[in-house]
Image 1 (cartoon, rainbow, N blue to C red):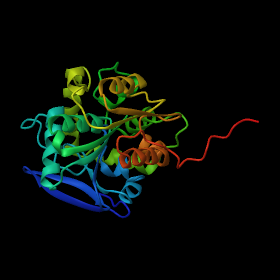
Image 2: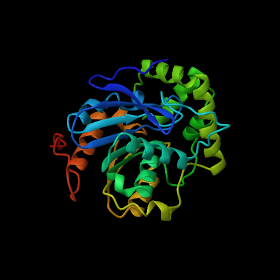
Image 3: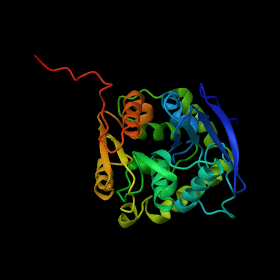
Image 4: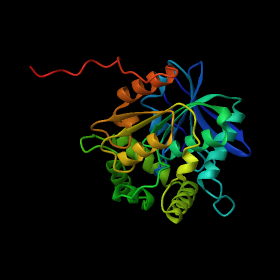
Length: 293
């Protein structure tokens, strides 16, 4: 397979300490890095194709495929440990290889936990954080999360994952399901995914110690779908409790994929937050809610 095109973005590769790392690049201005989630077949294209262009109108955007995912290298698990620390280190090294500093980070799910790790380990590289349906807080493992962790590499299994990630009314894109499934069954991707999920099962989930998260000092927007069955609202509330300089934005009728289920609302809220300094994000872009008469 080859990386697909996103309108207005360039598909690029960069060597990161020997790891051929794929990313999409678009726009100009302050750097904004988008990090996808960790479900089967996840990558920068599937997660960000619907909102990358909107972000690129305001920022210099990099949608990076994390190590073991998408079109970035997938080292043999016999020689590489697919831990959360390893993902943090890879993204830190990618930011440095791109010659960037003071970047804004938007991370979904595993991309959220990675964004937090980067901000904690290298606070000098990060400006603001947007954590959307972010992993990183210890929570019960739902049936929907189990379908991700125990994916069977069938198309039916992929459909089950997508349904678990989205709200009950969401009409998923069959082409996206086909794309993610085809990506997930590549031999090197399967080996890497098995290693990633094996490590998560051994840890009992994907989470940090609370005192580690509390080290985040950056301005942070915590976004969660009210119907998220993979990362529950309680996790968002815990992040707001632990991260001192944080705001919350909860989206109704939305599951785990705000950037796909509610791209206009999510993008507007994220852009509002990223463009304001020391102020609560605003959403005056939206029409007022109608009142009953």
